[in-house]
Length: 243
Image (tube, rainbow, N blue to C red; front, top):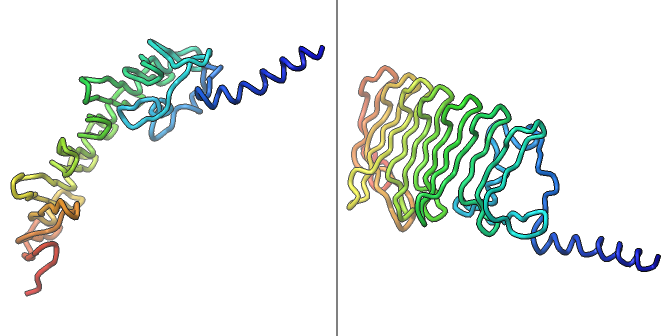
């Protein structure tokens, strides 16, 4: 009897220690949809297992070893939730699914440094696209449910400055167009728009790599809501010159 008590004490004591060393071992592989599918961000529970997008956690098998090869998780209904390929506990390739069977996201490595992530709405339409370079976002595009581009952005490979940034209303009208036009001189063009799609302001900006900032430079043209030109503004190093 004393041996049984000691054995039980050993098991109860070693399990928390084991979990600290190897991470939490998930005994249940079936999940409730409302617990794992965020209405805005989707299925994010696996992000922490993906080092390519900044994750720093490992997944362990029920025996406490780092997962290797293909692993699948399911909803309580039995529908597939996740299928991923793991190396030493980290995700290298995977797909997540909504409970209706529609693809929620897909991730893959395209080479040693670059990876690609796509997210989808529950009806199967594309929601977002990301290109990662060495764990940083190189480029991204977000879409409205109607398929129209909402926002798109691209960084330089060095991640030190932007190549372009553009945003649009749901009807396709532009809201802002920001893009590099002279890489040697770090000069950008920017256009801002009213809600009706008419041009509001346009001009140039210059990037200061020491301050990691973009400032207005030169002549900026200002328009009214009807699209008619109203005035010019002169800017020097981000400060408006008063006439």
